Image 1 (tube, protein in one colour):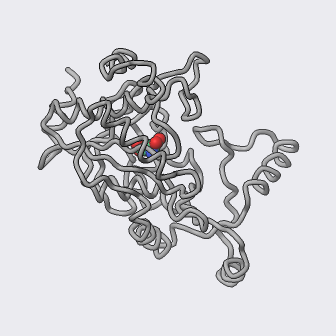
Image 2 (cartoon, protein in one colour):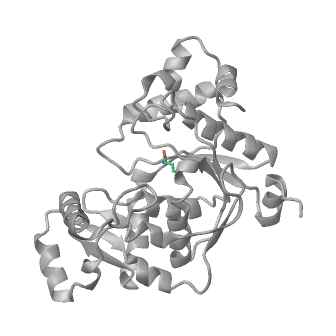
Length: 302
Ligand code: GLU
């Protein structure tokens, strides 16, 4: 059977105009990978008379700065990206993420977790010395130990009263038990395509909220995509597997599922994904070297 094109899929699901979003984090300068993402979003929105939103994912209040935000806006203006106003800043919506967290807590699906990174690391090393590999998530990080799922109420209260820091984590086992069938998403991107079976269990008990960062990426992105009526999520393949967590949270919170398009990544000369610290692929640096927005399109191959 012929694969449906993006615009056929768009017509199939959208009631109003399709809604796309570009969602950078202002914790560094934009690089060529961001340019590919931003331009793909803009091109796809244009091809189906859709809307393009800009969302600044600035929940990490220590690493995100107003200077980076200004630089991102300047780079996007230079690229010619036409997005709607107002721009959404996640830092202005912490109450919304907290309300979503509270719904999960009330249903017993989220629990306070107290182990520090160092404690988890020590636990994992000790286990691996004795018993072989500890399970890892798709990014290679060890899964969080699960015993705090079962702390009794008294102990939980006592630890909450004294803990310097803690997080709320999703009880993945209980969350998956809420599903009444397989969890899937539709992807039209450059990796696996079609109906993708989501495997949220691969991530273990993900963080939803930290006492020192008022929402996690997973929670904020899921709540915001729904709050903004996003119908099409176009982003890099580095977030392909994270989509499993987003789909699970959408089901738990009763939110609609957008279509996904995870695009290829732009790699640096070392063959690795570009990072915000690699200054020579920063859009600002390329602009200063005299490149034009159309040179950037050529460089990223669209
Ligand atoms: N803020 C994320 C980033 O800059 C992107 C999140 C998303 O597109 O879902 O990598």
